[in-house]
Image 1 (tube, rainbow, N blue to C red):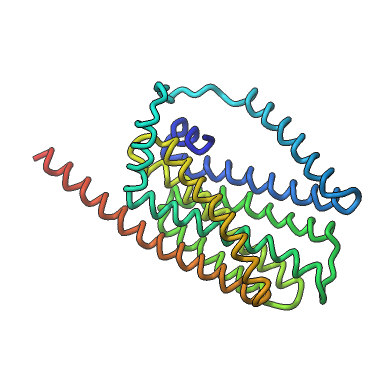
Image 2: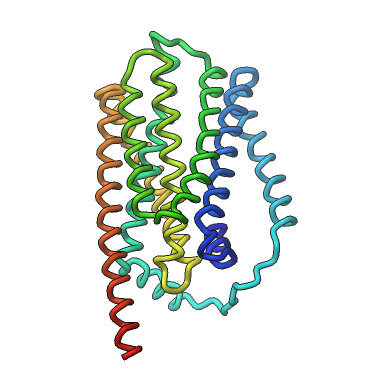
Length: 288
């Protein structure tokens, strides 16, 4: 809903940076929650930690509902299950949106996998870090606050395609650096990977509003559906790779996800160019 709200209320020329600010808020929330849970789990237990996060989430939701400006461009319609299914089916037939849904799946799948299993490596030899210290490593999320906004601004200037490719390659380089044994290099790799992830997510999510011809709320909902399916499947399959092959196996899985996301971004580029070419031809015919 938040992505659809931004797509409807923000001018297209400013949508990239607006979506970047939204994603940067996600990074701050993810960082704060993980640090908070790590500390409470060490001093109390995981039940108190999760309960505290739940209470804070409810309070934040109430503040959000109170402060959010009323929508000016939303056009309400009566609920019709057939229209809803038809709209979702049309989105799934849109090749550009399908590429973005695939990118969201692989992005979140790789991100959750890395952060799920890096913790196991850091609390084991040779690092032997405590849960609290591992939680503080998530301060790295702060780089996502910068990258999502900065890359969103670059996308408004240079175009989403080129900037998305760069962001995905940054994720690849960060994942490879985490194979290093020294803790400093491993943390550097996590930071680079996180920088690329939040930038990529910001670019892909803002692109949904441009690719969707109608019913942008449903298009954004499908993007997030594939995003969290990627989280569930990637996080689970990553555990199999961790158990069988260790951290090297986890990185191999993450790299395969990122290469597939890069392929889809290249495919999306060609689709967008074809659409722009057809629109230009249509405009020429209309003028003639």
